[in-house]
Length: 71
Image (cartoon, rainbow, N blue to C red; front, side):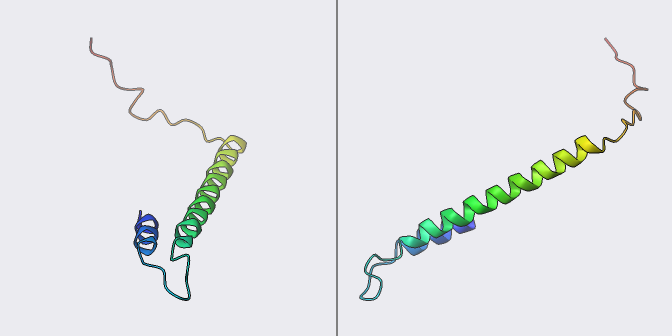
């Protein structure tokens, strides 16, 4: 959310002699950073999922098995 706010604030800045296109490229760079972040998070989640499938932990029944259903 902070990156989106930053990109919006920069895109509203007017063009000048040096930056004739203005600051609209900031939005593109923020979108690139956002995409890379999402890809890295997805790779991390997939890695953790593979690790859990490769080394499953036994289920601990705990207090769930001891409770009775009241109907």
